[in-house]
Image 1: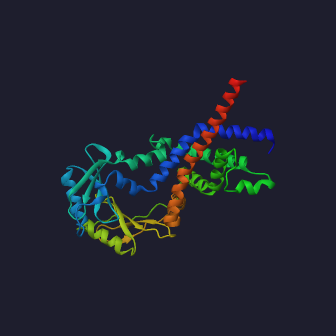
Image 2: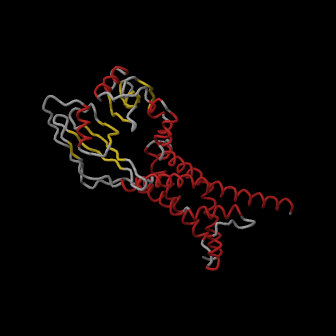
Image 3: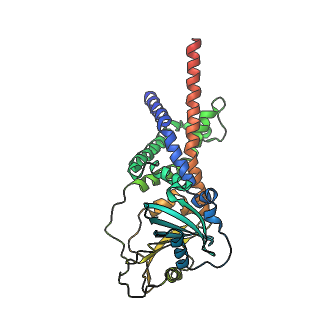
Length: 350
C-alpha cells in the first residue's frame, strides 16, 4: 500500500474508531456480561436464586396456584426452573398489560421470595443494550450497522499493522517497542485478539440479520384434547423422561390449553463440550412427547457468539473477546490524545 493511501486509511481508521468505537465497545462489553446471565442476575437479585428451604420440590401445579394467589387475575406465560432446583421464576401478564411481572417462588415451600418487573432487571437491561441499545427492536439495524463497522475497523487495523517482511519478528514480539509502547500495545492487542474479535463480529452480524423462513414450520402435536388434561407436573415429568441427561429449565404456554405444552431442556457444558438447549412439545391429554420439525439456523452462530460451543473455556474466551474492544478503544483514544497534545504544544512553542 502506498504512503498516501496508508495515510488516508489511518485517518479514516482513527476517526471512525474515536466516534463509533465507544458505542461498539460498550455493546461488546455488555455482551460479555450477558454471557454470564445467571451469575450476574443472582448478584443483582439474590432472592430469585437463593431459595428459602431445602426439600423436595412441590408439583408444578401447586407453584402455579401459589402464583395465582399472589397475583389474582394474572396469566402465567412461562415458568423458569432454576438449575439448582430451589427457585421457580414465574412470569405473568395481567390487567396491567403485556408487560411481564416475575415472581420468585421457593420450589420446596411455594412462598413468594421476590417480585420484579422483568424489564427492570439489570441483566435484562444489559441484554437490551447489547441487542438494541435499549431503543427497542427497531434499533437492531443500527446495531447491525455498528457490527459491520467493527469488522471494517478490525480489517483496517490489520492492514495498518501489516509489517514489511524484515519486521515480522519484531511485529509479533511480545515486547513493546521502546518509545512507542502505547501504540505498540494497541496494535499488538488488536492483532493477537483478531481471531476472537472477528469471530464475535461475524457471528453478531449473522444473528442480527433477519432470519428468512425456509418453509419448514414446526409441526406441533395434534391439538385434540380429550378430557381430562394431565397435570402440569405429569407433563413435565414426561418431557424429562423422554430426554435422559437433560434438565427442564423453562415451561412455556402453561395456560394455553388448546396447544401442546412446550418445555425447554438444557444439557450442561463440559470442559470442551458445548452447552445445548432443545425444545419439546408435550400433548396435554396423553403426555406424548415430540420435537418440532425444522431447526433454528441461528443456533450454531449463537453457540459460537457466546462461546458455549467450546464449553466453559469457550465461554471465558468469548467473554474476554467482548471486553477487548473497550481496551482497544481506550488505548487508541490515548494514542490520539497524546499525539494531539504534542501537536498543540509544538504549535504554541513554534
